[in-house]
Length: 178
Image 1 (cartoon, rainbow, N blue to C red):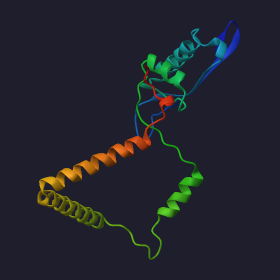
Image 2: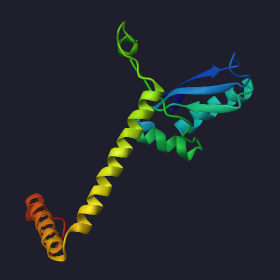
Image 3: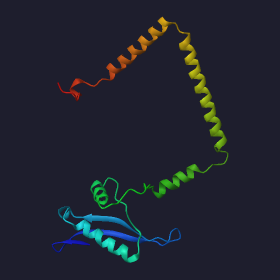
Image 4: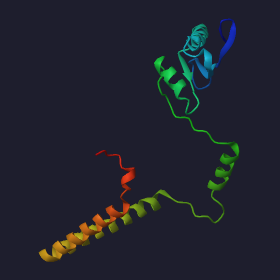
């Protein structure tokens, strides 16, 4: 707990992680840091993390981890100033949603499963079809005469200008000044 003028104004929740089956390293994970609004920018946060650092040294921790809440910009800036760097993106799902998705992804009896060969075959067919369309478009353009091409280009430009005029913002919303 952090105090300022003998009044509790902050707290830090941290836990020691490891050693475990997966690693021999010990780390300290900061779960939450809170400093009351009126006590911020007065050294309370630094003092709280100083206490965490002291505990980390006592247990031989190699790293201190922090997982601030998403959108906590002030906390992110505070941690960045102290040298904390992004390490990973966390993903969260409720147990109900995970259960529902796992059940839905289980192949049911008679339900066709997609094999890797099927996906490769689909990609190859799409590439062949795209190549054939591109080749046809090149042959069509070469077959057109100069006047046909000019008329086609004018029609294309006209359509683009027409679309631009239709989607133009009203002059009141313009950001340019006169």
